[in-house]
Image: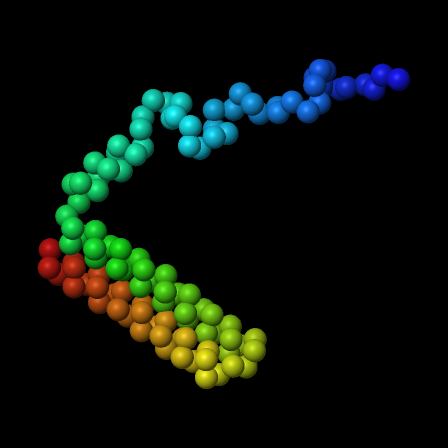
Length: 109
């Protein structure tokens, strides 16, 4: 018995996207540029104080948002006021520290 193949492919297990240039993100860039060299050049040109202020602000914002949101959910969904309040206060404090870090760096420049 022969089954009808509407696409006309001979091998049903063959990868239909095998010729896709965007399939492997770690393969060589099909356009010809190298993103790693561009990133390395940008990091070499950036001053250490700028990089430190950026990383500090990013980490503080992430910690602040995580703490404040988890704390609010603990209070709202579980009724855990002690732990939730501590996380919200800690998260807000981390966000305030991120703003202070940003403003201190901005005023120093």
